[in-house]
Structures are given as C-alpha cells and as structure tokens.
Image (cartoon, rainbow, N blue to C red; front, side, top):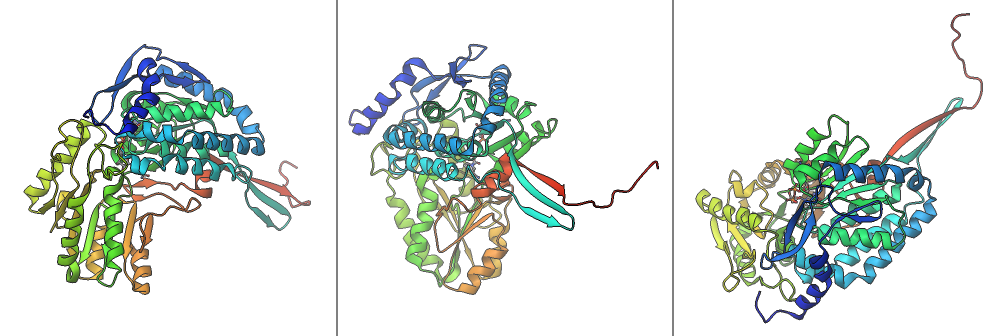
Length: 506
Ligand code: NAD
C-alpha cells in the first residue's frame, strides 16, 4: 500500500521480520527442519501481493517423518495424566493471550482479514484451549450399562496420531479449534496448514512448544494440499483426519483415506440462508444479515450468503440493505476502521469477480459493488457486493462464492421459503428471523442445516455441536462431540457371577 500506512503496518512488519529473514520450516519432533527435498514456495500478503516469506514445501517424506514423530510420542502422551495435560493446554492459552497483538497483526498480514475482527482472534483461540483443557480430565468418561449378572461400562481412549488439515480463512482460530480437543483427548498431531496462510499456524506450534509440550506431540508440515496434504491422508500411522475446507477437497480426502480406512471429520462449505419474515425485528435482522456476510471479508463458512426476504417487506428491506452495503468501508486491513480487507489471493479474487459476471448474465440486479474499489489498485481488494432479485436456480443463489457477496431472493410463503432454503447442496448453518414462536420452531426443525440460529447472528457456545449436513460436512465439533471423533469408545463387560457358559466337547 502507500506511504500513509497505518502504524499497525510497521508493527506487523516487525513481527514478520524473522519469517521474512529465515522463512518458515516444518516443525517435526520439536525441531525446526527444512523439507527433505530442499524445496520452498513463496507466501505473499494479499494487501499488495508482495512476498512475505519463503515456506518449506513438504512432500510424502516430510509427512512420514512427522507421522513417525507423532507415533513415537503417542504412548507417553496418552499416558500423561489428564491433570498434566490440562495444565499444559492452559499454559498454551496463557501464551496465546500474551501474544495477542502479534497473532492479530500477523493474521491480518498473511490473510487480509481486518484487524477490526482479528484483534479478538487470540482471545477466541485461547478460549478454545481453555475450554478443552478443562475437559481433559473427563475426556475418557463413558457410560455404566449394568445388566443381569454383568456390568458393562464404556471408556474413551485416544485414537492415536491424527492429521489436521486447515484452510486459509481464519487459520489461527481454526487451528486451535482442531488442535485443542485432540490434545485434551490424548492424541498426537500432524498439522498441515493452508499454503496461502502458513504464518500463524507455525506461531501456534511454537507457542505450544514454548508452553512445554513434549516433542513430537504437535508437528507441523507445510506444503501443497495435493502433495503434503494427500500424503497425510494416506499415511497408515495417521488414524483420523480432521479437515476444514472445500467440499471438493473433502471428497478427495475421503477417496485418499479409503485404503487405510481413515476416520474423517469434515467441516466444509456452505451457502447459508438467512430467512427474514415480515414479523421480525427488521432492524436487528438487517444488522445481523450484513454482519454475517460482510465480516471476515465474507470468507467465512457460516456466512449468511443467501438472504431470503418475505415479499411484503422485500422492497423496503432491500433498499435499506443496499444503502448500508454501499457504505461498508473496504481498505487497509490494518486500519481498525476498515470493515473489509483484501481477499486472500489473486486467484480467489478472480473467482469472486467471476461470480459478478455470472450474476449479471443470469439476470439478477447488481445493487451494490461488483468490482475493485477506487483508489485500491494493488492487492486483492473487492467491494462489498450485493445482488438482489435473484431466483433459486441461479448459480449465485446456489454456489459458495466465499467473499463479500450477498444474493437476495424474495419469497411469498413459509413453504416457499423452506423450499428455497433447502434447495442447495449445502447444509451448514441457517438463520431465521421471526417473532412467531411456533414458526421459529417448526421452520428450524425442517431446515436442512446442522446449525440454526433464530433471531440471532452466529453466537458460538463451545459445548454445542458445530458442523453441517449434506455437502457441508460429516461429524460435529464442540464439547463432547470433539472427543467422540478423536477417541475410540471401548466397552468392557465384567461378569458379576457364574453366568451360564455353554459346554462344548464334553
Ligand atoms: P481447500 O479445501 O482448498 O483447502 C483446505 C486445506 O486442504 C488446505 O490446507 C489445502 O492445502 C488442503 N488440501 C487441498 N487439497 C488436498 C488434498 N487433495 N488432500 C489433502 N489436503 C488437501 O479450502 P480453502 O480454499 O483453503 O478454504 C475455503 C473452504 O473452507 C470454503 O469452502 C469454506 O466454506 C471452508 N470452510 C469450512 C469451515 C467449516 O467449519 N465448515 C470453516 C472454514 C472454512
């Protein structure tokens, strides 16, 4: 950007200087190591697409080294007392909080997410660690299932070394969301972060080690999805893959993991509806609809990317919406007043921009945005974009754009709203705005979505299940749901007396 950069830019430069100078390696068995091939790739900042650092480009041999380290560390880590695991996981949270400013600025630098929203990233991430730290002691708890003459009881045990593969949209927060429960469960980890945003994942791994985590418990291999990521999903010593990313990649991972019968947990894409009925608190519905699509640059799996508005209020509601969208501030993500920063990568900008052409060709109305904002010639900047008068068959109403791009459709009845809401391949989140309590319940029950928020934006409570239906995912995260994924449930049957044993060969 220009010479009138916000002072945060210089601070981010200072935090990023060591990565610029030294590059980013892998972290295997507690050691920073280059790729066995010596290959690296370039990591750029979306603010102006200039290089930030070189990154080790891992392949199958680096993944194998990390998997061996995770396998070797597993027996001791699973036997480490839950109290000690809890202490260590809390110690990581302490360090995350201590480094909150650095994490926020590096995340902004690497992803283009605005500092306005990233300033809370460390707090949320530390919260994830604390939440699961406090559950480390109960992770193994099971059920008592007594029956005549027998006591059955279940226990949960860590499944083994696991692979974690994360995307680029909020890489620090999402990494903690996967790593914290795996550690609390007693698993060891090989993490493959997204190639477009590797910095904060490495910072997290460094802090985890600084907190005293034994070598080999958390390993990081950087690299390209189709090579390093693929090798991780195929590795026989990796027992499960926790994946967050695109639905297409989820399908590939399922195929890749078939030979080793990999357990998978997928958090995938979405085309989430927000349904606004005429009886709703329309001011709040408007604020929430705007926030859920235009915050985090619209690069958010739970974004409310389809807005369904009841016909009787459609005209007024979309007029107010259009006015607000036009005022959303796009610009320097380091400026705390900026609401939308640059999109992650030039390729992603091209993808999002293509949907503007698609929407226009399909006949929807481009009510706001649609291109590069004036005065922001470098970097991957894109205006807050709004299409109105769309119909359900249009691609802009069906496909995930993953940018600050909202598609609005009118509806005439509850039945039609439900029909439109469910008529997509995805089923991650849905939002409903109504004051009718019966409708709120019945509509929520009939929505094909893993999570429904009524008269609410996405307010996350960590014990609740997080995940999607249909092409949006398999499995749930949060609370005990995470432990069900990272652990095996074992049943133990104890005979309480002399039950009848059939005699053979007498
Ligand atoms: P992506 O699927 O392209 O990449 C995600 C990760 O998978 C990266 O680390 C990548 O290197 C790796 N990968 C790619 N191909 C692979 C392969 N064949 N084998 C193993 N790993 C492979 O996704 P993205 O573009 O980085 O992220 C955006 C997507 O993530 C969107 O669809 C978004 O909705 C989704 N997402 C979902 C959630 C959720 O909780 N449901 C949260 C955030 C993002």
